[in-house]
Length: 99
Image 1 (cartoon, rainbow, N blue to C red):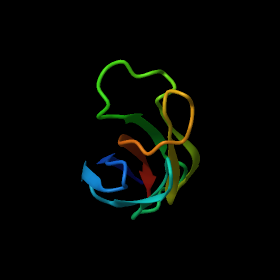
Image 2 (image 1 turned 90 degrees about the vertical axis):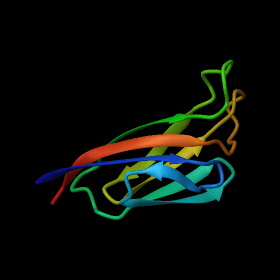
Image 3 (image 1 turned 30 degrees about the vertical axis):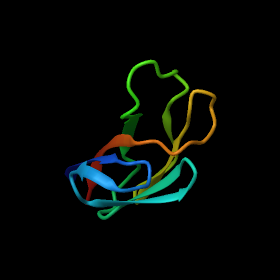
């Protein structure tokens, strides 16, 4: 097996600002995005993320989560300081094995 690392910085409209390639992103609705991995991971990869571009003073509720994850992609949700879905810039790193 081969290990694959994908990473990206995404603007709140779903535009990829920078990244490793090997994935696409689509804004589905307010604060909801989908990431599609071009190479299928053999199992769920490890994934982590953060919001960016909002300066200091953010609440710990200003966050990004991955409620759905598979070898083929992930669902991403971003929120504001009140816990409401809000379009936000975010970055992610996914790492795992491919065949």
